[in-house]
Image 1 (cartoon, rainbow, N blue to C red):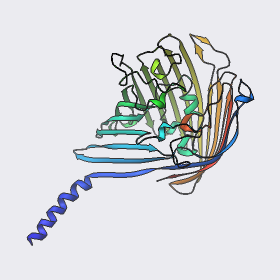
Image 2 (image 1 turned 30 degrees about the vertical axis):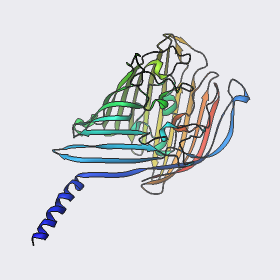
Image 3 (image 1 turned 90 degrees about the vertical axis):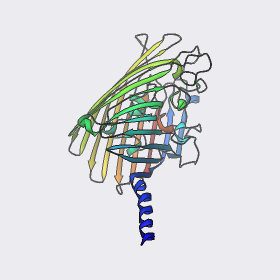
Image 4 (image 1 turned 180 degrees about the vertical axis):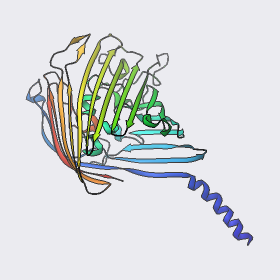
Length: 395
């Protein structure tokens, strides 16, 4: 009898902590057979990327998450989302260069958190600015990629980061009702995640913020907020972000030598099976060493229509010519559109077909850099076309 009581007590002591902690493994496999090209550049055909057919990964990832119930409504845990390339088994993208989103554990997002119904405090590498929820019925969730949000809305002069390193974030919980999931954040510039945020050819100069050397300015930091609003069929979002770098005399300025500011505002409405959303973005960057300021705006219309197991997706965006020192720079604008169709085989698996087009003016530089999708870096003025069919399985 005593042995039975002891065994029961020991089992209870072991079982209670195990029941209070939840460990999950999840992710996405996303693969496409398609074609990509970028032709018509101002430099001539020698700079063009001709037709190339690929079996391409379009945003696969693996997620490890732990959440522990601390009692009294308080919880804590960790979230680690790692990008994976199931097309080649490595960390290189379609251009054969390293894709930092697939190179390390928590390469897409990683955070430790503690919170309750009121909200959460999150520390780590986290998604900001470009995350749009219902405002973006395109993208990797549905059709692998799109040329609206990743290239037009978050492109151009660009924000400092769409997935920021060394971050402190406060996230509003369900207590905030219609404004739940709003957030405010700040972070310190450093090597961690730096390769994601840099312009081409400037990967070595991560010297602003925590990575600054001895006797160097370590003041590089960024901050921002996201206001989410949802009320029945109506939803809206306002993003703001700014960054301040320590400055450098580098010949080719990168993100660590640029002060940036950006606003993105969007709103949408669900008309039964149809969702329509509008977005506007305004971005600027200033080179610390020279004071040169560049500004651009962009606009987008996005829509989704459900027909049972089949869903149609549409997006169109315009980026007018940008300005430098207040003067318009001719032929630097672009417009783009994405068409897609998905067919649900189950709640977790669907097939898709997509078509993307970017029409750059002679000096335009908009491309499909997001997610390592493109097969190279197009020259100024090149127009991009991509299409494919794929399968996405969520697990």
